[in-house]
Structures are given as C-alpha cells and as structure tokens.
Image (cartoon, rainbow, N blue to C red; front, side, top):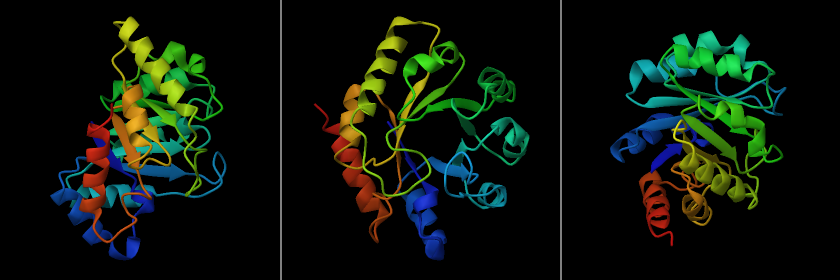
Length: 220
C-alpha cells in the first residue's frame, strides 16, 4: 500500500508545515498534478516548484501530466526530477512512444484513464507501464464525488495482471479517495491511493493519514 498525498490540495500558506508533517508520517511519494487549462479546465503545479521540492525535500515525485500532447513537456519533467511520470491515454495519439521514452530514462511510467475510458483502450500498453492510474473523478476539478463504477476498472485491471505474466503494473486510484472509498478500491486490487482533500482537510495531516491507512487495512 502506498499513500500519495496530492500536493495540489495542500495549504500553500503553510506548505512547509504540511511537508514536515508528511515527512514525519513516513510518506515517500507526493502526487504532483500538472494541468494546462486545456486538457483539463484548471491550471496546476509548475516545473519550478518541482525543482524546488527536489532540492529541499527527500520526497519522490509522482508527476501526473493532465496536459494535451505531454510529449512536448516530457523532457522538462524528466530533467526536473520526476521519479514517476503518468500521462493520459486520451491526451495524445503517441501514447506508446511517450511511455517508451519515459522507460528509456529509467523513470517509472504510468498511463491514466478517465472515467469514460475503458480498460480495453490501454491493453497494448499494459506490459510497458509501471502504474495504471484509474481516475475515480473527472480530472482537473477539486471536490467532485467519487464515481463508484470506476471500481470495476480496478477489478478488471487486477484480474488482467493476474492472467498475464508480462504485466507488472501497480494500480493507482485518484479522485475522492477517503476512508470510505479507499477500502472499496483496495478490495478491488488497488495498491496506490492518491488523496488530497481528505488528507489536507484538518490541522493534523497525520491523523487523517492514520484514518485512511486503518480504513484500507480493514477492508474485507
């Protein structure tokens, strides 16, 4: 199980304190949302922040590129210090080539699918990627409700991996992940959980994190 706090949801007026709490809680990865206002409605975190975080913290950076034509930005995030780069299946016709390029730089590669995109759309990529990100809300807008049908994709991806020895991917979920929804995804086979609003909703991030971990561990 890997919990990835979504930095986009942090209180940037007290970011240093948030990062300290996450580090003390043993968090290894931060989820770093990059948005272009085109592929998704909003603008997200930028390359300069990624560089600063790499210089001043020990977190690994899970860069989620919610952008059109991610191949045009790829080299900047590779050299900027991304440890994992996830692109969207819907964002470019060159998904295979982009995933190959990420792999060539020995960075973890991920492919994300929106709620309206079936798993069948990425079958050819599954042997290549380290992570499949199932969006459990529409990407790029905060505060949306978890889409229950997305759990079916997690089940499908887990079953597919069990049947195909050439697939090694983790299953990551992102959107509306809290102590109620995370166990549903964990039961279906997810092992990476991006959480933003839930983790940063109180003064004590470590308390929220403990609630989330306990809920996942209690899945039936």
